[in-house]
Length: 463
View: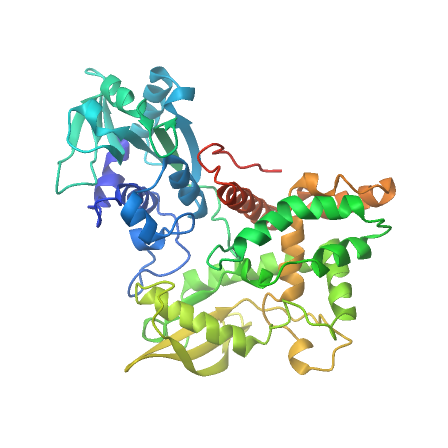
C-alpha cells in the first residue's frame, strides 16, 4: 500500500461523465509531483483536467471520452515517463508484477483502462488508478474517479484483467494499463511543440515526410544549402508550431524579487538557451537568417514587446482557468523591468495589464536572457539584439529535433557526415539532449495523431 498514500492525497472526482481518463491522469501527475510548468490558480502549480488538452480537445473528450492511446499521449505531453501495455500484448502475470511494483513504491502508479461490464458494474469503458494490492487474495484496490457512482473498491486482479481485454469500439483494439512515473528531469523546459493552431497538421507532415524528400531531390553541396532548403520551404504559420515555454505569474503573487524556485527554473532555461547557441548548427542557421533579413520570414516577429503582449494574454487566460478561450483578452500596457538577483545577475521581466471586458489582470513574464547579436546585417534595432529565445534558437532546436532518418537521402557522403556530426544527439550536452529528445517524441506523437494512428503505435522514438 506504499503507493496508496500519495494517490489518496490527490484523489479527485471526475468533473464530467467522460473525464475519467483526464481525472485519473491529473490525480497521478499530482501524486508524482510533476511540475505542470504553469500555475493552476493562485500561486499553485497543480494539474487539473482542464490543463490536459494537448492530444485531444476538451470539448471532444467531454462528448466522446478519450482512448487509451491518446491518454498515453497526454501523459507524455504532461512530462511523465509512461510505459503502456495493451492487454492483447501483455499477460495477467505481467499486470500483477507491475501492480505489485507500484504498490510497494510511491515513485510509479498504474492507471487501468477496463470495461465495467467485467466487474458487473453499470457503464462501459473506464479509467481509474490502482491504489494498492492484496497479496493474500490477489486483489487490486481501484480508486474509482467516478466517486459519485462507486467508492474505492477491491477487485480480484483476474476480473480486472478480463475488463482490460474488452475491445474498445472506438479503436478496435483492447484496453490495457499505463505505468506512469516521474522522469529524472522535467522535459520541455524551454521549448515545446504546439497543436493549438490548425496549421500544425501541415507542418508536422512537412517536417516528417516532405523534408527527407526535399533533401533527396535537391543537388545539395553544403550545410548552408541544407538549412536554406528546409527553412525556405517551411509552410505558413510554422512559427505557431514550436514555442518557447514562458514563466508567468499574477503580479500580486510575485513581488520585486524572485522565489528560489523561480530563479532555479529560469537558470536552467538560460542554460538550455546557452547550449543551443553553442551548437555548430546554430552558426549556420544564424548565418542564413542574417543573409535573408530583407526577406519576409515566418520567424521575423521576434520583437519582445509583441511576444510579451501575446504571452501576457495567454497567461491571463490560463491563470483564469480558461486556456485558449474565445473571450477577448487584450494586453493594454507592456513594460520591461530589469531585476537584480542576489548574485547581481540581471533578470528580465515583462509586466502587462491584460483587459477582458471590465476586468483587469496584472501578469509578469520572466524572460530567459541571451546577449548574443544574431542579425548583424539588419538595420532594425529590434532585429539586432534578442534578449529571449528567438528565430535562430527556435529554428536550430527544430532542426535538431528532426528524426535521425531525415538526413539519409543526402547524396554527398562528406556532407552527410558533416550533417550527422551537427545534429547527432550524442554530441549535445545533457540538458539540450533531453530537450531535443522530448521535442522529437512530441513530433512523433503529433505525426501519429495527424495520421489517426495514435492508438496503433504508442511508443515514441528516442533517436
